[in-house]
Length: 164
Image 1 (spheres, rainbow, N blue to C red):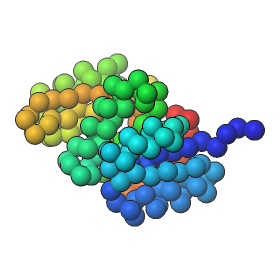
Image 2 (cartoon, rainbow, N blue to C red):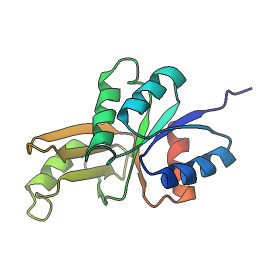
Image 3 (spheres, rainbow, N blue to C red):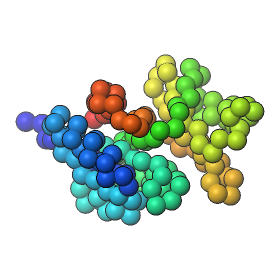
């Protein structure tokens, strides 16, 4: 028998956690939650989830991004796929490199002032985030996908099934 897939949701909004947990539990997933980066790292280490869903703004403006980068750079967590949950609009492209597309958006007068760019390739599903920190420095990292807030059950489940 397959082991129950475990999903970690990291969000500082208990209502969001409750909604997502309810949807996923009904689908047979085991759901664990954390309210911030520190708690999330502890749960990643001790609970070994199959997937993580990360909110962006928690204790700090970019705490979810900082957690994502820590996951990508830590050998212990780098194999845990994660989705970014956000109400920020997602920019779509069919260009081969979503990172190149983010750089092009940065040069576009309509987008250059945005602090955060969420970019997804509609052809192959690759995705990533380009954000500027408080010092104006640009950071890039790949993500498995995005979940829009407010959460839609069908889209949430579809995105999760792609990665576990």
